[in-house]
Image (cartoon, rainbow, N blue to C red; front, side, top):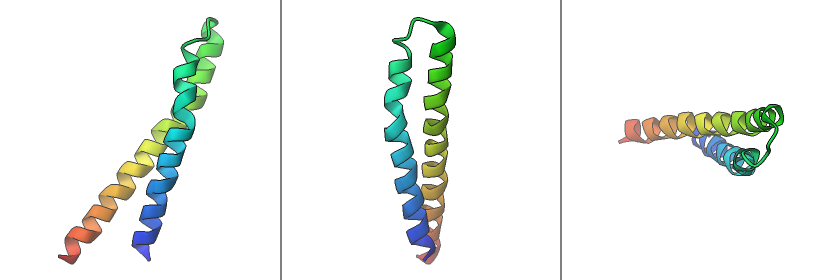
Length: 69
């Protein structure tokens, strides 16, 4: 059961990364520095959170499979 939740966490993290990575790249096209910073933070924070979710879920899933052997 825990493995299913960890795989689900990886999928949610990947969704967060791929859904928001376009906003990070499009933020650099905005000329106003204040709007660029706001757009960058709005898109970059979910990307970082998704990367952390993927990292923690994958590491825990790896540890579970390693302990079974």
